Length: 531
Image (cartoon, rainbow, N blue to C red; front, side, top):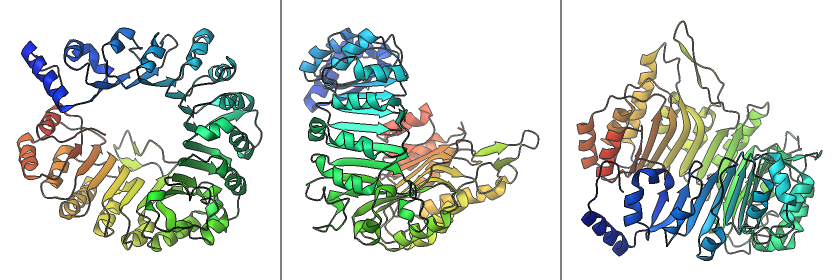
């Protein structure tokens, strides 16, 4: 990679070009770096660049695209009405370039919008664009819309406009609708809308991916089962809905309490008695993500449905029925199903603010209530097949218990937020004890290959020292990510290098964004960014 610190001679440029061509290297290029490296990149790499990302502030200059003769994919972000797509977009597409356009909170002139819809885009993502935009998008022209992948997120649209838009999709293979609100639609049911979509013969023929994430709408299981056979080519499907069933005895139909993922390549049996899977079972490949609200009660209680589930998610909301939900969850985990390898526990009401500090006393307190994982640890620890655990939040004392009683085959633990067990600003020594114990247990652990903590709230003086002290002894972790609440400058670079020399297992270390540490990781071919 060319950096600001390296000045390449003409000979170096020629050698690098020969090497990249000889090795067949293909490069993904972020245009945010082009302003610094444009001359070197255009002299060395134009034949090797296959994927170009044009961010929101660069637009899409034609001159730039002309340089990359082997370009296969181009992603363009439009965040302002003044931004335009390349004038010769159809010409690039004839060369085999796939265009992905991300359109976010922007309105565009009607004239430009009409041209925009006619283009045979590969991917078109609309995120929170004004209502007037998506309405006129539906009616501005009557010709078919040639978009292979359409994603609509966080929009409000009339049902009439939505029907007009869907009715003009003729080559769409991927359709995702996420948090869409239908203005003027008084029903909470998605049945009528799903029926309309299933009546679009051309769309049903081309669709391979169908994803609905509509937590405010419900879907009747018998309507769903009857319509799914129409989507005969769909192999990847997501159906996440709410429920209007308030039966406390049927936890699988209460709201979106549970989610299940099913994959054809993880199923061992040759037949199914689950009505929801009947239309898929004959297909050679399929991946399904369902909320419990769309499942017929008998599919869960009377069939072997759970034997097909490889990932089980519990959505927590601190509802009065939480006790029943815990019982159902532990019952499923305790079945010790060989196919169930992933377990996720998420609180959808979790807030961003976790610690509140008193301005006078400087005492930090846990402001928001959280759902404890302690009530699940007993059943988790005796499960012989779980490989991956994911949690929205865990407190340090719970992580200590979990690491002490790690399931026998567990390889991955991922936590969004690791919270303190105490008011650690007032009692730092007690919280430091938990942090030290976590470090000790990770040093001794020989089964985990992946540990990820997106945010660690703790009194650590140096997060990088903490991570490398774990890697000094641990020889099973391939990937470790621990992001602290506050970054520190206290590092021991020579010690880190010694640890990297002796640890040949670790391949990814994601900690604090320190250029000195990152340069060291580069030297040892350690990845320090999310992939």
